[in-house]
Length: 314
Image (tube, rainbow, N blue to C red; front, side, top):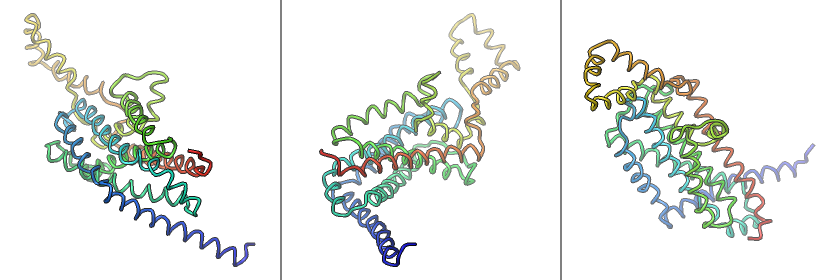
């Protein structure tokens, strides 16, 4: 049974860890102000605006929603990566010195997590505002909160947070800011290629894609937007293109005036439906949970690597 002195010492250690979280959180916000960290917000606005200007038929039809989900996920991942990719490695000598002086790595990393989450929240609000101002039609109904904008906002935040924690993990591992910035393009390309939308993935590639933030981000956006409940226009568009062929003009006229035209639309919609996009609360809970779990796992791995900083001869 531990003695009173041991219990007192243990309590003191816990208070030290808690105090250090607030100390380093304050330090991070001072760096944010003094080193122009606020620039992440206008950058998020610019990227969101560029995406909003080129996205068509998002939340209007299946095809536009899926492509838009890819674009929105890429914005979130971009924001998350550049929030934290240099945050640890740029001050590695300082962290090493303060750790030897009594700093708890877990306290420092918790402060980083809270700070990064606040940045992600701010960027999410900016994204929601930009998309709305650019005329992207938000659905009204949300499967989880009752309002789509809240479901959509939570989804964008979780995608950004997961990407942020992935970059934070990398920042805890790499040797320098140069190495960190070299890794970023590969991470971005990996997220794009294995998103499951840009390319048709099969076999091992498809299995790998389920480990990416982009795949789960797109899936969640399509779920909260009720992708399966939207009309599909791909088959209609393919048929309309054939009207440039004179021989097809009479057939096209017949199709439009007959029940076959409705059958074309119904068939196209059925073919585009995906079970993983099912508009259910259970589906959203699973997807939100996985995105949050990814962020926590990345944070834990980063913390473990940073715990060995005293062995680092860099």
